[in-house]
Image (cartoon, rainbow, N blue to C red):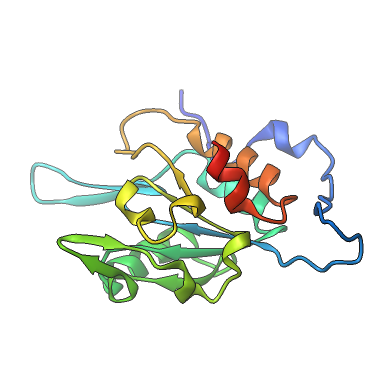
Length: 185
């Protein structure tokens, strides 16, 4: 019996609650939360099969999460993969181009020794309203308090971690300074 992870029936039956942004001033305009995802072992998993065939699997609940958060967030990809591989996987995850507003690849990363860091200022987003979700801690080297670590996904186990990430993101959309909150975690 296979389950369709692209649909979360529990979410369909809940009314959308419009978030209100916490602010010192009730008239302050606060930008949308920017959510930046890495690709490597985060949303997809790529593997080679014995006869040199390769496949890419999409992490469970990826589509459910992206559909929910796109209403409230600006979503981007920032990967240390090559431009071609990032574009290929981006096309699988978002074939209609409805989720991700910007896509950054290895040429946008900052290389320190043999590690690729992600300098979020390159996104053009307000860093107090930006989070980076990545399985590699060194990706947070430039902005450690914008980082949300996630376990890598290899495509084999059944995971609901993206549902937890979705919940955290929905909690963060109401925060004026996500760095201050994430620093406490």
